[in-house]
Image (tube, helix red, strand yellow):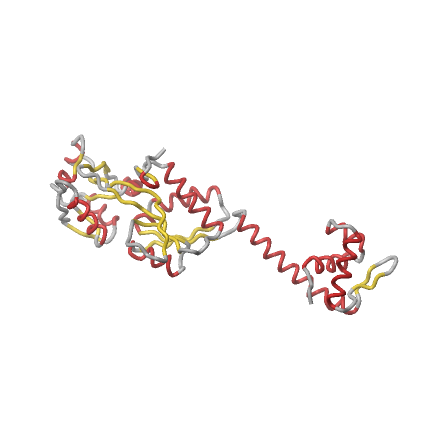
Length: 311
């Protein structure tokens, strides 16, 4: 049995209007084309569904039983197609992203607010997590994509560069570092350094030791969250380092942030997504927006994708 959607729509239109003329007008087809569709449907079913007369078209007994079912199928299908259209036109949709705690409390909410102003019907769910778990949440399908610093490659994950940015020195107002025209890592190390636990400190120590005349990183304290480090700096317990995208949080703690040199150490941040898995229109749109947002805000990063200077 080869029944088409066009045949079912023709049948439903005639059933609703009781007229071939009105049904043809509602479907924007000729009356002869409509009659042909009904005839094809009846041939496919092997049953008459409409009794024709010179004045009116009436449903047969089979047609009366069939119409509620056909009408529901068409209504449900139209609903699905409307949902797809809304997703495609960004009138609806959900984006799920994972980001480390510091990024989830600074850069991402700021970008979310800017995106939502343009696309108010798109919902964005932010999962704040430990930096080490970002890729695993992408791999498990819990989120559409994740954002974070460079990590060991994974054969199932695509890492697309989002931006590269240098480490900055963070200290209280009036601190001796603020009187220096330029701040070097050696200058920073003369004061107690409060760093983050795990790969943050490990990778930073490797980068510094690899540089010519690079100082050795020996933190006075290692804490789990940047907010803790900033609170300790605010209390006068030392200094810390962070990436420029955290500027809003640094300002919240009323601290100063300055560039660090000799050597300049930077971090590349990536968008992590599953290989060979298409993103929804909403997720694709928000990902594209992130690239534009970062490129337009020089306070987030000194360099954007592939190390190219910000415009």
